[in-house]
Every structure is written in C-alpha cells, then in structure tokens.
Length: 198
Image (tube, rainbow, N blue to C red):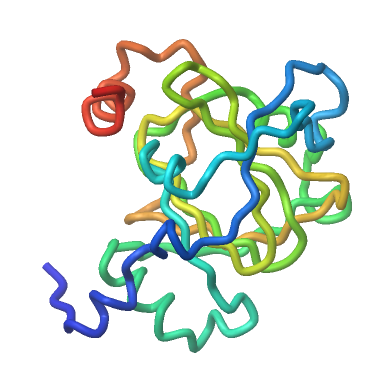
C-alpha cells in the first residue's frame, strides 16, 4: 500500500464546493442537437454542493503543467490512479467518431470511477439526480472531474466540437459501459447505498 505525506494528502483533496466555480444546470427535454446547452427557461443552476451530494468531485487544475503538477501527482498517488492517457475527441482525431460519440451519449454506468481532466476544448458531462432528472456539467480546460462508480451519466462535446482530455484509471483500464437499466448491478447498488436519498 502506498504511503503519502500530509502535504500530499492535503493537495489531493477535492476543491471545497463553497469555492468552486463550475457551470451546471438542469436540462430541458428537447431532442435537438445534443451539443447545445439544453438549459431550461428560466435557467435552473445546480450548485457544486448539490453535485458533491451526488458523489461528483471536482478540482481546478493547471492543464498546461500536468507533467510537473505536484497536485495532480498527489491526486494520482492518493487515489491510486496508476494508468493515464490523453485523448482528443474530434472528427479529425477519433477513429469511428460518429459511433463513439453516440456510445458516449448513451446513458450508462461503470463499475469504477470515471476520471477526466479537460486539457483543451470543452464538453458536457450529464448526470442523473435523485429524482432522475438530468444535470448538465460544462467542463472546460483545467477542470478535473470524478464521477462515482454506479452513477448514471453520459458525455457529449459542446458546439466547439473538440475536447482534449486526460483519462485516469486505477490499474489496467476497463471502459465497459453498462447501459440503463442497471438497478440490479452491484455498482449501482453500491452507488445508491453511498449517495442515494437518505
């Protein structure tokens, strides 16, 4: 088991929701282009504290300094994120782009955390709240987000049509999506036990 210093532990803690600035809102039911913001009228923002209650963690990072960033190193060490890759999601760089984008946007869970840091560009992570409503989180350069194991979610690019992201994983990566419904899946039950309505 890895040992870490008090400084590493402090550096690795997710940002306090009271000090976080990230755009999130409840989505409308429109079937228009998934890359549009899909805000309700009037807009219904979702606070970082509400996201934290759903198990969503957030760090504001220096995306340009990832190779030497002491904080990123501490996060990886403390959370055991041993595997890393950088992927650019765009028509020009991602093989089978259209198919991949559709797959990302299917509502699903994973049997591990989903960890992404946006290195450039931007995109939307959508998560379900406890009333089964969609919350859209707009992730931009420097945003590191962790979605907990078992949360229903999906991803899409925004109208910028490009996102360069770091993907982190504990051990060898397994990117298996389990499309909804998954109420009997062990990871879904674990999520509800930890973060479900009390």
